[in-house]
Image (cartoon, rainbow, N blue to C red; front, side):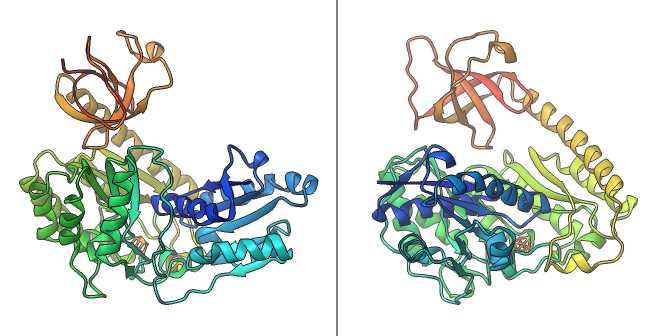
Length: 449
Ligand code: SF4
């Protein structure tokens, strides 16, 4: 038996791929390790979307050098977008790394590990082969949670000027619906109750290949018996069709929650980002969503301080956030990424100004999140229970005390639930709760008797 540790940075696609690494290496005798120190093989699955994520990856593998110095049979691999982007350069920068696994080489991982471990050779595989590899039958890992991901497509054709994904993940390719439904079925049979379908732009699923469109795929997946909840990420606002919007009112399993990255509230900035929609188009799509599904919870991504963003552009972002009143916002200060077109734009916003705009935006959103959480108090809602809360919460505003379970609402809010007297709660159940109290980023609730 050998031990594998995967360190994951970045998006849910990487989380999904890290799970694939474990499953691909299981037939070679690898089982999960609790820490890098107890592993025989460590893979850092990296993200190139922001400079900070890339630094984190190099800092992580840097710390592995001491283990490698003590144990020559200890091996290190680097995977994901940084691996794809930097390729062999990583071996020069970090000579203790044994292999580089590009984003299109995932299915070749067992052969690569074999070469590294048995033959002692270093390997760089960053070939961007065009065909989507055959989905192989892999043993499902025992369900570690009630919520899991299924990738429905890879790559992206959109070329937003700040983003490296089309260069490091390649062009958009969709998996056949049968393979997706089968994977969902296997996960549900293993105990999963909530599935999130993943892709860089799920709205354009199947278009190139002439497959059924995304709303149809949602319908097929929702038909899998035992699946309680269905989500998806990420959606591009330019491709959010009326048919997809209607799916929120027609598919009972589809959670009333949508993450729709806006990136900026200024049409001028959106044009420089090559987002291919305007502020007005985005607001119209949100209005239509709320018409069809009035209780929809909305999240977004925003980049602050994109090159050329004026104070007036930034004001437009603030006013869009005030108008929409998102349930959650992921906001970041713009940073140059090698290979992304915007890295060559000249009118960069000074670092200090970016930080100050980011703080203003986060303060605005924190206030909105607080108000929205407080408005939940007294409401009755469904929570899918994901596990026991390992911590007592008395010190965090919990006056009722007791052991709580943690789960999520349809809107993706985290809720810590106290079982009703004489009732039991178990993981994987959807329970009705009444919200008692709003904390900073979560809610306290009691099961409805
Ligand atoms: S849609 Fe734009 S931001 Fe999203 S992955 Fe594609 S290029 Fe990157």
